[in-house]
Length: 148
Image 1 (cartoon, rainbow, N blue to C red):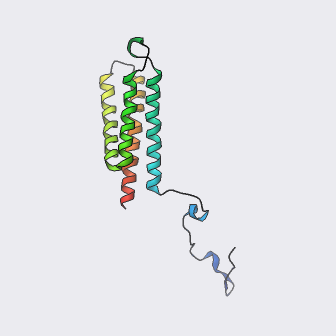
Image 2: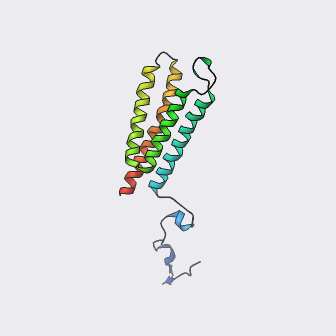
Image 3: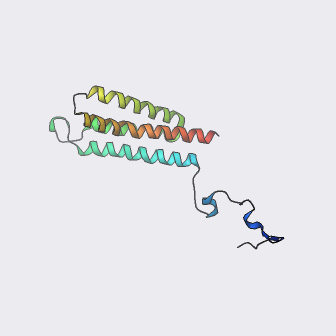
């Protein structure tokens, strides 16, 4: 602990500016920058989203009850994994591509499968479009944070 310096009876220890402004640095803990946290969040979210669709497609039966892999259900996961790979290397291009995929999924699925129950359309549209939407915004925020 630092020794107290007294000037005419006033404890100046509490009036001095702290040397460390970040609590993570003060506690000597590893920490990320804001852009690094955005990047980590986007990658984690997209990995989970891609794995969800790939595992879901691999565990379903094919069309008309045929045993095997339901490829149409695996495709969104593979596309999401490919876009994640692009965004991992080039955040700006990948972020824009993820936002475009989210918009395409949000518009295409309800139009193409409009005859299904509304709650199924809502859930599936959200599951298809929210991970790339949030991931795209996070990658763009990480890209913008690094430029400052």
